[in-house]
Length: 381
Image (cartoon, rainbow, N blue to C red; front, side, top):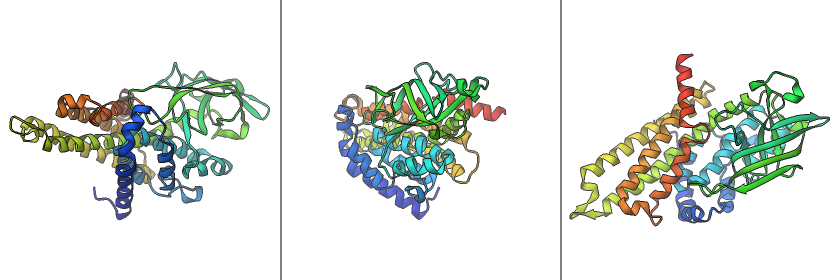
């Protein structure tokens, strides 16, 4: 696929920032689990915290393909940084743009898209991951407020977010039947009474991004913070995740590219039996497979992004992109560690971090098994 000049400019800008500003400090953030506040602020100034948000709402006014391209490049620098960018763009900015009122867009979308504020997406709960309908968090309407009670789990950006989009069962308020029609979405600020941030999680990878539980204890949410219509929360959630998967697929491609580049460099330098290991067919075949699979994954990402930009259905295509890209990055990073041998297992070299960061792409925003369900149901419909 031939990119436009505008897309190439975005690619070069994001790549330059990732290699010069992010990669040199990625290992430090991985070790300390420190949130990269200054880097996130710089991403905001570059317009990368609201890539596809219209300029009217302080975004860059670009398309989803630009976002996917930028996500790949930032992920080459550090996946922990890129997922913070992903949440702001895909999981918070996109639903605010699609379903928010003008007042909500002015109050929440503008500071989010400009990078002045960080958002989070609260769907998962301790008992419900892939089973999104099984929401125990409740929202009961009392006069001019909804009262939220419950716990949200694995919330990316949770410790740092200024506000989040929360999904809760409003069945008691609505009198509707249960299931998907009972769930509504709310914009909830961290300074609302009853909003409690749990301790930060210690994770296998993407350590630069904060993750935690969020608890709601009689949390008072003004009725004007209902996002979209009452009872339409799952529609908002699933629509949001369809787009979010494009970003995660792009993240997987970026991690894979970084691992491949490190492998190529090492294969040219490391000598065994009197020659570089890159001269051995076993290593050459691993490198060839890496490059081929990465190219295929990237094209799947680009196709899904373009369909979204064209206003065409893209749910199945985004699921295919995420499924294949996340599978690819696991295979690439596994082979990268193998090429490095014993050194690949050491933190002195970057590929063990790529390997750990890669795994989450098969889990969040819909596991690989969920992606297969989405794809197969589309085929059988």
